[in-house]
Length: 222
Image: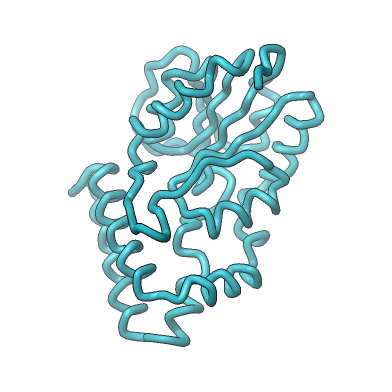
């Protein structure tokens, strides 16, 4: 369907609309019930990977690859139906970035549309999309049936997806927080980085914003 007169805003999810990593939502609750050992070892490993990235020992992509592999191993040990029931009761609302729902509502009121592009799995992304009022999303860091890692944490994969849908829209605006998001913004008409912790941004059409609710004041669809 062509939407040549409308702007599509493509949002990253984790640390852009959602505070933290949605792929680990509810895991603590599940493994407290089933295996304290798996919980302690798994979360400790992921924390070490995050620390190694923060102090510069490994790259973002390598950290994402290691963290993803660890999460996949955790999921393999789970009853996904039971985990889904835990997510149904999980307090996602309290972890939304301040202003996330308001920004999305303002975009839709302006006659434009919103999509979430996330490396997390559909069990969590579908629930968060509903809470945020977003009907379109593309996700699945890994396929929960085949355990196939999709590598949507890789910026090139996100970029390829955006390239595949860009011609259907008048303009495409990207919003994210990390290097993977910066990669897909290269093919957007405009980009916004929230709480960017990287170095200088050389792309002229990409702007830095401190808080998400500053997005609308920047007239991203202009």
